[in-house]
Length: 267
Image 1 (cartoon, rainbow, N blue to C red):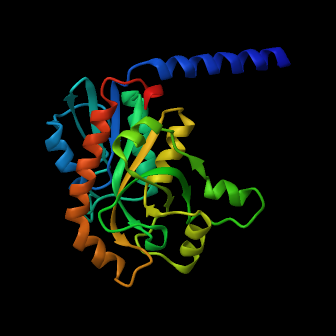
Image 2 (cartoon, rainbow, N blue to C red):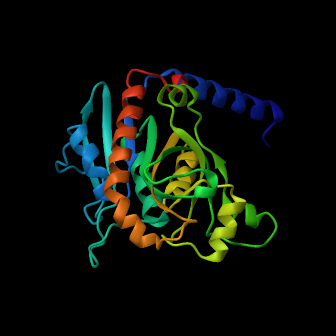
């Protein structure tokens, strides 16, 4: 039988370990990006290489770009292309698997999920805006049973970065995640309930895994389409992808520059 004293001691040890971890310099970063189109400008910016390595199983299409930028070990990870259809393996399943494998293999001090997203004009989002997510939640996991409904939504606060926000002056909003680019009436109602400003197809899944393994994670999202606008989502997404990716590239570079030389607790 475990005594209350043992429980208290365990909590104290965990708190001490967290405090010590937050005092360590950030040295290794994993940047998860779902689409290679979004990733390649940053690969060039940070002068990363794809070189062959044994970080991931040879059977998976996942791609790792890596190198040293300033004092940071940067790893940009993409889930790669579907081997049959040749399209990016977007969505929560790939995001969860790749995030788990990356944490296990690379032991990062910080995860950055960077990517494009839909935005809501009713919440102040415009094409090309870049948001740092304050909260994440799912909008497609519906289970109308008490407690199970909250488990499906899986709402979480993201890792707080008050100094980064003050310095970079990024917009802040809640992020809602689902496995579809478009938005059904059920999804829309859930997104409104989540009080979300932006929606994507990976963020909450990455947050779940990062929280499970106690790795700080932040979420940088550039708006490609207006989800509550009057244009077809797919059309607007493709039309604005290049411009939004450029805005994302600039924002992530500024985030990484700010992180360089700092401890987690200084973010």
